[in-house]
Length: 135
Ligand SMILES: [Zn+2]
Image 1 (cartoon, rainbow, N blue to C red):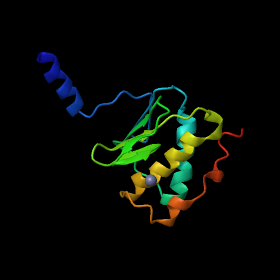
Image 2 (cartoon, rainbow, N blue to C red):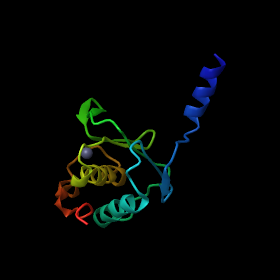
Image 3 (cartoon, protein in one colour):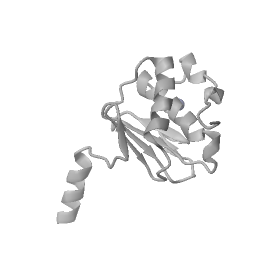
Image 4 (cartoon, rainbow, N blue to C red):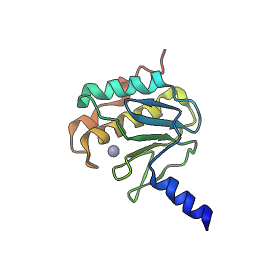
């Protein structure tokens, strides 16, 4: 019982394990592949579309799992959860295709837009803008 109380207290304090922080946002990658430079590159691209995005308090969780997961009742490869300010990005088998960066870019739009709709045309920007993995 004592352990349960402690776990609940930890869950309630909003602290996450971070590999690194960018603009007050906490980034944790279960695969340890995401770097601060790469993350910031995607954020800066997203800034160009949305204006400077406020990452303060957000937790960016890159999962080791390659299985799409449930996001608000839909199967997804990325998810922005507004209540806890969490962005989740699933893993892909080929890191060179920049899929995780593309998903992150999309989810950053949700962080900036504060909505789950895709009606804003900026969500339709093609992922081919990514030269990050062709270096
Ligand atoms: Zn979306």
